[in-house]
Image 1: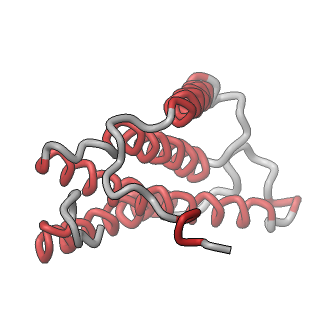
Image 2: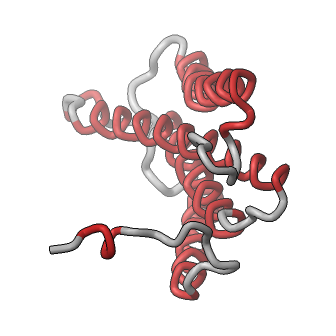
Length: 168
């Protein structure tokens, strides 16, 4: 079986992606937007902890950012600066999405593993210092990817983009 021909990609992408990619991205972004609006509008009746609410909305937002930038900018290879910006935003958004996903999973695991007697209130048991935890979520999930992307860009801005041999 000749895998070179099956797995090979054209050296330069066409001007547009397949129409199915754009249609599916539009449907997914619409679903993400509906989810975000639903959680914002009906936050008082949805039984979710404050930390869970923040992590879920940020995960949905960064997921939408990742897929929207990918579909809208992946073929911007004719303009080097735009291509580099798309690469940097994709790098940041994908890292941040993974961090928010990890915190979402952590919150779900902590909520599921609680003892039933302690989980009677809507926002969970009253804990001292819950606000710094939320601030910590933002610092880690948005700050760490930002630091990684800045360091990567400072040491090798030429690696972002469409030139031959670009690493990212």
